[in-house]
Length: 470
Image (tube, rainbow, N blue to C red; front, side, top):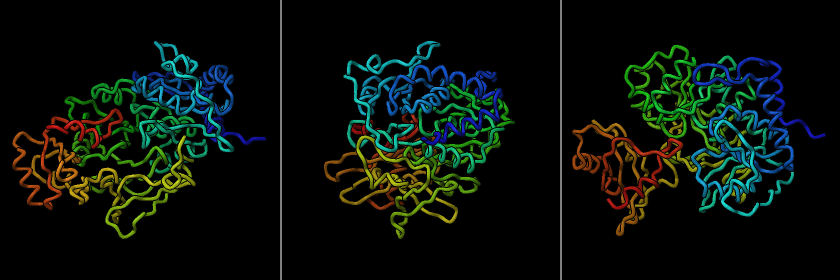
């Protein structure tokens, strides 16, 4: 007899313990689903999904809908693989994901109705893809990520790995079922899935679901709902400190920032304004949580703290100042799909592209392998140049990237948020006096706000494209 799915087993324990207790709240503060009502809704969806063979892939593109837990549990019951898709994913990207992952159906929102439609009614006329052959270890979830080619790829996760990530997060961050999670980050993203959805299922941590992510709405809803835990991104926190006449947040006890490094200046302003520290959280889609700043006592840019509970980090180059690391934990995904990269992901180990520096207090993010700028054969780490720019009085934020150069392969450029009295010529001269000649920027672009992607991250590649001809 096949053993029970571990996440379903954890859900049954949650259901027995929490029963009629509220599980999901609206941003108005009223309960919209109890744990028992999630179970009832799950059985309705189970009746719509059980027609698909085990191992089939169903895409879920419903935003932060309160049906998410029920749909995911129904798919686990039917042994159907879930592929979360963000609402912002367009038709072309969705079609590519459907084709890559062999999607047979999609859960989509239309008005107030949530429907599960055959894939060919959602796709742009593409032929039906074949159901993948998963061999002995079929996944429960596919996390979509960008590949080395134009086609997307996915990461395979079994329930055991998803449950391990949930337990590592809750145990490391001391999140319990008496807390109330505030869900503004998308449930379809790895961060939201692991910090919001699985803690509700496996640990009984109730959840507020938010669709309005404007700064004023966020702060009002945080106060109105009495949420105690806020998993956010740097973009959220940077926006919240700029709001006037903010309400008090007496119930909020834990603020988490992930997705990109949190600037120290933003963290300080938030602490001054709300009397709350922000805990930096570092993770990856391939392995879940990696590091967490438990004490919030270090003020180094890029500091992400110590490894999560039950996560081991091994330096790839033990003698280097900054290096990649090997992440080992029970939460690491099985493999990429459809192509494998076993040297990067597999057998309980994942090697991120990030460069980390080990300090006595913990780890610090200092860049990415792919971010290194090739200036006439010399490699420039953008983080070193950014640190220089941030030391100049009046510079609040800085992101450094490489632009194509006919003579030097690439040249160093930067986007900067600064006070009005900071001028490019003076800042360039400061960099030339502080850095080596090949490290100093050739151009500095002043902006009101550093552009970010839909996930709240800064893309050096997109900045290079945007400022290529200026």
